[in-house]
Image (cartoon, rainbow, N blue to C red):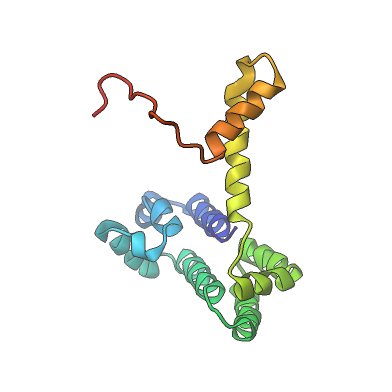
Length: 173
């Protein structure tokens, strides 16, 4: 959700840029903004550093994203709750519409957010399984029955180790 808000700010700024000179520093920043800071290469790091001077709104959006990630990585729920309250105040002053909407959503579900900090659990694994199941269902349109689909889901998601393993396609190492 935070990455979507950053991308919405970036897109609005690119659309609002009047000439090529204003667009030039924004070119190629999308993936650098969406990545985690520790996954950036030297070129992407330089792009983000240039962005601080070129476009303050996108840079502020990136700072908001990084600060929220830092808050959610904390282990003390009380500290995270107070930091989250401070973060939502910062967002309200930022006047970035996509982030204001995100802050309202986070405030609405703050109990669940703090529970995530307290337990360290999220719905990420179940969402991943759901997406994998949907992909298998799309692939299964040629199957003649529902039990064949269920068998394919169990085969792909059930952690079954085939012995001997299936052969690799020709030309593979």
